[in-house]
Structure formats: C-alpha cells, structure tokens
Image 1 (cartoon, rainbow, N blue to C red):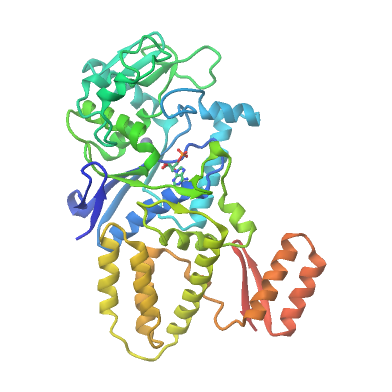
Image 2: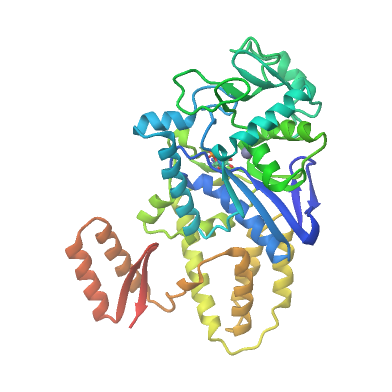
Amino acid sequence: MVKFYNSLTRQKEEVPCHENRTVKMYTCGPTVYYYPHIGNFRAYLFMDNIRRVLKYNGYKLDGVMNITDVGHLTSDADEGEDKMLIASQREHKSPWEIAKFYTDIFFQDAKSLNIDMPEHIIPATSVIKEMIDFVKVLLEKGYAYETSKGIYFDIAKFKDYGKLSGMNIEEKLAGARIDVDEEKRSPYDFVLWVKAPKEHIMQWESPWGMGYPGWHIECSVIGDKYLGESIDIHTGGVDHKPVHHENEIAQSDCHYGHKVVKMWMHLEFLQIDGGKMSKSLNNIYRLADLKERGYSPDDFRFFYFLAHYSKQQNFTFEALDMARNTLRSIKNLVKEHKNGTKRIDTSNYENEFLQAINDDLNMPKAIACMQKMLKEERSKDVYNTFVKFNQVLGLNMDNLVENNIPDEIKHLAEKRWNAKKNRDFAKADDLRNQLLSLGYEIKDNKDGFEILKK
Ligand code: AMP
Ligand code: ZN
C-alpha cells in the first residue's frame, strides 16, 4: 500500500485514485519570468518522484501542470506588479516572448534532469475564457463581489479558509493592517479578476471590462478543465500553502460545493546559506551553473534523493560533490554487476526498497537499501534489480562508463575539462594527448565528459 503524508489531514494516508487505478494529480508549475533555479527543480523532482513511485506500484497517472504566464504579482498576496511585465520591461521584449523564452528553458532543464512530466502542461493565458466563466459562477453563487478594482473572493463565505496552513483567520483579521484597497470586505479577500488600467499590456475583454486574471484562479480552472471535480493529489512547495493553496481550495470547493482535492503534498525548500534559494533573494544557481562547474544533471538528481522531501535540504558544493562521488561509485558497481556470474536472490532488497518508497517517499532509506545490495558479490541478478529500482530513480544508465578508471586518469581528465572551460585550449589538447598516450580517450557530451578506455 502506498502511503503519503497529506498536509490537509496531517497524517499519512493511502493514495486515493480513480477507476483503473488512475491517479489524477495537479502540480503548480513555474512562473516563466526568469530562469528556473535548482530550488524550483527540487519541486519538480518531487513531482517526478511521486509519479515514478506510483507507476512502480502499477498506478496510471493523469497529471496536469500550469505554466504561469500572466497575473503572478511580486507578492503572492496580490500586491506589486505582474512579474511578467517587470521581465518584459527589463528585457525589452513582449510578455509573450518572455514566456516563450523561459518556458523553453524550463522544458530543456526538465528534460536533462529526466523529469517524468505531466500529461498536460497548460499556460494560464490559454484558459482566459474558462477563467471568466469560473469567476462568473463564483459571483452567481455569492462567493465573490465586484469593486472598482476587480472581482474579489469573499473569504468570510468559506468556513474552511485557513485549514490547510492551520491559520486562525479570526486572529489574523484582528491583527490585520488596513488594506490598500478599502473596498475589500476583508484584507484577506483575494483577487480573482483585475480591472486593468489602459496602459497594462496583457488584458482581455470580460463582463467586467478589460482586465486580467488573478494568479490563483488559473490553478483551479486548469485543474477543473483537465481533471474535473475530483483530484487525487495536489503538489507544490511549502511557500504555496498559506496563500496560493488556501485560495485554490476556497475557489474550487465553493465552485463545486464540495471538496475537490483529496490529498495535498508539500515540499520543503532547498536552502542556501541558511535561507531559501529564490530569484527575489538573488542567491540562485541554475542547472546550467552546475553544468559549467562539471556536474551532470544526474548528480543533482541524486543529490535530491539524499534528503526527505519534508525536510529542508541545504545546498553546498561540498554536498553536491559527495552526491557525485557516491553516484559514480554506484554506477561503477552497477557496471561490475552487469558482468557478474554469482546467482543472488534479491527479493529481500526488493521488499525493503518498496517499503521505503511506499512509506511517504523515504528515498534516503531506499538509496541505502540499494547501496547495501550493490555490496553483494558481483551478480547479474543485482544488476537486473538495480535496473528495476531505476524506474523510480530515473538515473541515466548510458553513463556507466567510468569502470576501473584510475584516480590519476580521472584527475587528468578533470584538469583538461577545467582548462577547456577556461578556454585554455592548448593546455586542454595537451592533456587530451597525454591521456591518449596512457590509453584513455575523452568524449565530451552535453553533461560534461566521459572517460573511455581504448
Ligand atoms: P515559481 O516559479 O516561483 O512559481 O515556483 C515554482 C515552484 O518551485 C513552486 O512549487 C515553489 O514552491 C517551488 N520553489 C521555489 N523556490 C524553491 C526552493 N528554494 N526550494 C524548493 N522549491 C522551491
Ligand atoms: Zn497553483
């Protein structure tokens, strides 16, 4: 039985599903106004992890992710400017060009990390009509009201508001400052549709004049359109819990008159220097930065497995080095097992691995089990079991090439790679020839280099 921790009920529960063991899953996607960073990719590796574990257990996936290309203001709570417009001014491009550029980069990075992507990936701007219809229903049912600035959701009408994040809304209201928009009934009412000033670049016709959607509405609408009124799992980072996800729950549940999402799953942050890695704090690393320093996407994927998703994970290059070295030795061992002759019954390892992943994605325990198995005498049975485990791990298996490469050769190859990166091509060629004369060939690839024994 697969059990995950449900942030809403605050307990581990069996995974819900639909007919044919199909799990309908929604993941909050990227806001495409800048390069995605490795903290964001911790969130998408988390999604990948859930999807692969469910598939390993015989479930089918019907997954959806939104791409936010309109309406996400600099604060999640409807304040500031639209992030897409800030980017558009910064780069002197239209918001559409910005969205295309950063969406493409998001897809490229996700591909190189081998992320098992959802079946539907939907930009917010493709469902403007559906958003308007959804807001109309909320107005008709009395959950929303109009001001001179836009249409707002009236949180007083939804008794469960604040339940997910455990906030006491009455206490919060008592301490709240006067909101900038005095027409709002409560400072925590959030915007569904914004009436746009004339100069606003992205705007659409609506029954309330020209305008654009609030950020939260897209997830309710895309979830509704592609998954319907019952969603099994909804994922996102912990930052989304207190505002974005509370708002999504309020919109969707009031729209349908019943609970829409059964299980909420939240991922803790990738930290750096004791704080959150984020674009706004300017302390981010991209996948490209890691590649430039000679790390492969697989190294970062493996790094993800070393902490439980519900715990913060601190990013340092020392920790990434450790992940890379462990991964290299794992790949070397796997290669050795491939040619092993001993017969080994691996069923105990298979059970232990399955128990770990099915217990709320305990990846550190699953990895430890896999490493224990690799210490067995060299055996093709171990290799075959590793291949099976790799359906969950998603590591690049073409890369098992560093078998028995002596440390001095690896060292020379690293030196050559650094020389090449520093554009010292003469030195890089020298080192390549030196390696050739020692019987090793270097092949560069998109993730770095491989050492091949001639
Ligand atoms: P954004 O593109 O900012 O809307 O974020 C996309 C996803 O990345 C969301 O699920 C966030 O919760 C998540 N996220 C942002 N920063 C981090 C971080 N430092 N660690 C883990 N997840 C993050
Ligand atoms: Zn969302």
